[in-house]
Length: 298
Length: 30
Image (cartoon, rainbow over the protein chains, first blue to last red):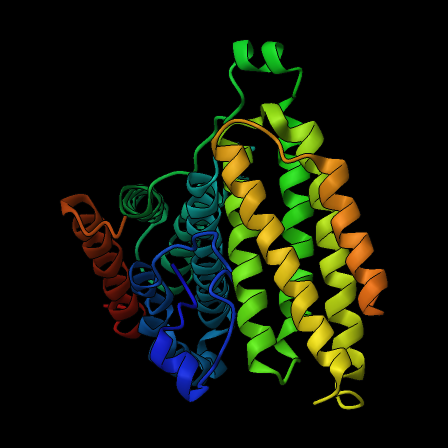
């Protein structure tokens, strides 16, 4: 989990950010540094070859620079591959990521090949061997990206009439909206409101997790999510825009209570989904609309 | 999973070994 803010931090006001800021996993950064630092080996050889290149010609520095560029590129590709795989692993449904790590491993081999062939006295055969060893050990160290799509099984899909792509699209869309909400919330000064939004985001992510786990309620829950996430986003955006004007006014209080309602409804929705039923949508939507009008914040 | 298994260490070691070998070979061609 990232971005966890404990009760103490909340009380003293240090960095009250969302606990649900980025619930999707990224790969551990430690392993990748072994690869990121690899090009530094060639810094001194490049400098030396630039000096001697004046007499011996440009092949040697060019080989080193091309090789180092490929190694840097490989580091970036492998990092992306690890991140993409962590994200893939954390999802119940996902398309396979592009083969970042395979391409990265090939870039390492090609980088070694250029350096060996153009900048050392090793011949073509040895250079090929270095390339193969480089690619091989990169694959051994960092692995390959998954190639299988994680889909709804056929039985569930047929029983519920929901397709994997619909689940993925609905979840992505909702996640985008949650990210929007998080960004708007970051500009709020009121800590109570922020705490409330944190909890709403937490619940909303909980709802998404439930839907991923059991997507049969998706068609109905999707409308709920749309109405509620759009509503929340609009309320927070409008409030953030004009917060200086009505700090300490009763309108600020109204916002807090609207967000309280939203929080409660998300909580209820989550409970309902866990019990395999969907909250009465019309009621939930009406509750929100009524309150928005009543509090004069819609 | 923060994998620092034998394969990871061995693969990383070979990568660095090749890099250092090539670095030296380009500095001292003979």
